[in-house]
Amino acid sequence: MSKMTKTIIKLTVRDVRFPTSLEQHGSDAMHTDPDYSVAYVVIETDQGMQGYGLTFTVGRGTEIVVCAVEALSALVVGKSLEEIVSDFRGFYRLLTSDGQMRWIGPEKGVIQLATAAVLNAVWDLWARSEGKPLWKLLVEMDPRKLISCIDFRYITDALTEEEALDILVKAQTGKQQRVDQMLKEGYPAYTTSCAWLGYSDQLLKQLCTDALNDGWTKFKVKVGADLKDDIRRCSLIRQMIGPHNTLMIDANQRWDVGEAITWVTRLAEYKPLWIEEPTSPDDILGHAAISKALAPLGIGVATGEQCHNRVMFKQFLQASALQFVQIDSCRLGSVNENLAVLLMAHKFKVPVCPHAGGVGLCELVQHLILFDYISVSASLDNRMCEFVDHLHQHFRSPVVIQNAHYMPPKDPGYSCEMLESSVQTHQYPQGQVWKKLQ
Ligand SMILES: [Mg+2]
Image (cartoon, rainbow, N blue to C red; front, side, top):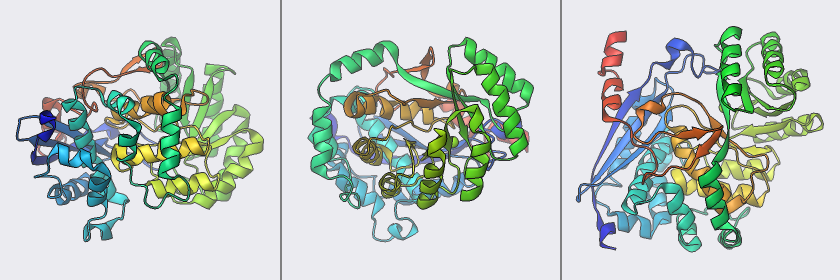
């Protein structure tokens, strides 16, 4: 265990932004000009080892997340990795329940994004120190140890520690076959790259043709700004992909509840599998009403990329307010809180289809969904992980997609490490890329 006694002696955080708004990549009904960004964290140990972590943002405001990470750093620096992982639940709570900083959360908003960045770096360090990719660290971890990483406070009315343990123990059966299957075939993915809201019809057609040629069978379209445009775009893409491929639509919180129902009903003939984020991400009862109204049309509700903690997910599940759980590796409190949500989703029999894209979200969340399949759900029914083909070239271990599947990462860690040259040129506002734009 001597390799575990590394003490964290330093934490640095940087504001790294990509000018994606220039070409409308990532544009949707509510985020019309996103500059994909991260608060990028590096922790260093006294033995010279490093852990990398990040949280995703869309431009302005990243400096506030950076500030929150700096506020949390005093709770991390000076701790040894062994100390942290021997009581990870306690350490999670130390960060999320600090007697003073708790007031600016708790467990939501900027402070939770910062918690995710810091803890993602700690998980990266842990996986590296074990010489395993994170998914493998999780899959091979003793179920009791895994459970000890989760803070069950506020969710025991939906899932107890004993129930969670029971789920993990049951899923030990057939685990090795699923590992082998994933290594061979990968985890199914869908693409959001073809139909950002700001793209022209011609670009949409071209990207869709390319994606079909590359073997993609599941496509997501941004909707919600203008009904006539949505009808035209959905009809176009349905024609392109044919009746048997899968279509999903995403409104990014644009509508009120009644409006969501009317609007999506108008798009029902294009047979979307789900409507994503139809309304405010905090409106659990609103999502329940939309779910109920759209169920006869065979359209489910998906949400989660801005669902800020396990308590919210618990209520969405209890209220039957979603039919697809979209975890996010950087919105929830890192792996710890995502484990809680994966286990709750399994208990409520709701499939998990992670949110990804942005900067690094694909790199990170693939580890979590591999763990979900191998060690929790043991099912691929109605399950797939989002993929967006942007900015992967800035990562040391970028995602590998083969035939529209995520191939399991092999390098040790949580795939968070960015190329130092990319970080420096994109650092805001002093990096070369930004200097040129000023
Ligand atoms: Mg979305």
